[in-house]
Image 1 (cartoon, rainbow, N blue to C red):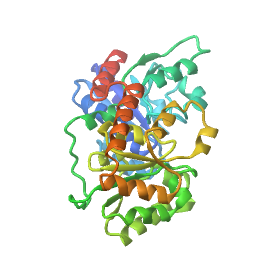
Image 2: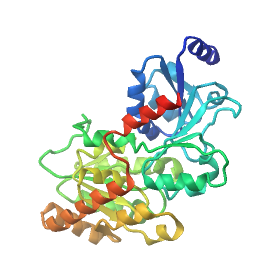
Image 3: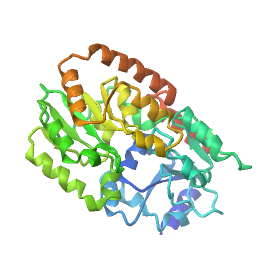
Image 4: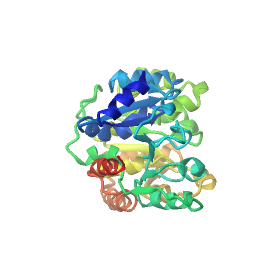
Length: 362
């Protein structure tokens, strides 16, 4: 049935695109592009999801036309004009002899984890580079390839809204007279949540502030035995000022947050730095010992506010809220501006460049 529909579109001169995603939070990476493509004449966008991920399917049907959702068991056998994917591990590539052009758009602003995935990522016809470090990786990935990909210096479209009048309406009951702390831990075992368990949550909950807990989405899928989702939900129920966020899009929390607490290895701090707000990072030397190509993460850890124990974390937060760190915050803001310039192509117009690139590839 899907093949016949695609043939119909082709006959009438339509261009067809499939966006292949494996996780719920991958939708928001593409959402600003999708909104623009929806209004493009004679262009149809499908979404290919991992069939085993029922949560993903249930999420997608709230975002897009269910008729435009196809299983990854089927999508590789359908002839689309473009295949777009943010996945770096196991994209559901179309069959090789299809003329479908394959585009990698990435799902984060760091490159440390890309080098081990070279043999997957050098199978794409085009790449949307988020920043200059992505260009360096792409050159490395295709060094021994005769056919080089087309590279578009797009940036990260997902972040465009952060430099606009972005004021999301969110279902969280926050006290507007109190500061809001966003705790956004990473998912691996070296993260602050694994290191300190619920103790770090208790430290945060003691502040006279709104506390938002939003871990990396992989926390629940990579380590289901830890039962983090239920544990975090239970903790939030026991503390009136704590909100556990299950929605996959962390970015929508940035405008309503005043301070971010996060970990080494996640580039959420880079994204949050667009708003020039204080970032506190759990420093983990071991992460740097086991990873290469860590320029971005090194510079993020050098922003200024970092902790390795909970007493230090508590002291930093207390001083920021009390207004004792005015000079330190100003210094961090200057570093944040430099990091943004060094590692991200211009934010605010990335979606425009993505659409322009897609038009050229079509």
